[in-house]
Image 1 (cartoon, helix red, strand yellow):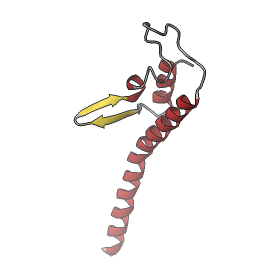
Image 2 (image 1 turned 180 degrees about the horizontal axis):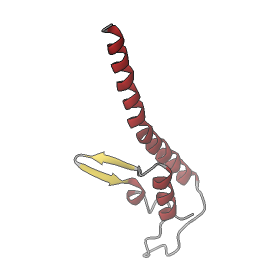
Image 3 (image 1 turned 90 degrees about the horizontal axis):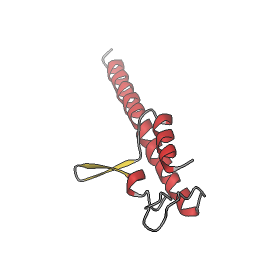
Image 4 (image 1 turned 135 degrees about the vertical axis):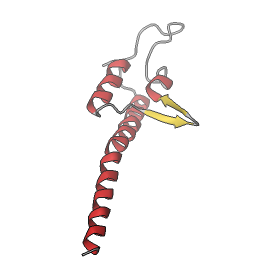
Length: 94
């Protein structure tokens, strides 16, 4: 799986959440930011994509998975928290 395929698979599996971080007012795509480190060729020194999973690649993949999973679950847990608080408030009013 090349980097573009991995990025697409992660977005599809997470329901549209990509591996990004906010820097100031800008949303930065970390797959693109770290593309050279993750094996994408620069076509100056490297012309083929490295598809072997290095230790550094696996570390970044772990970071990506944690980030995307946390942001995918966050809206659900926030909604559950709001619903639970509203139910507790309603129960006190009886």
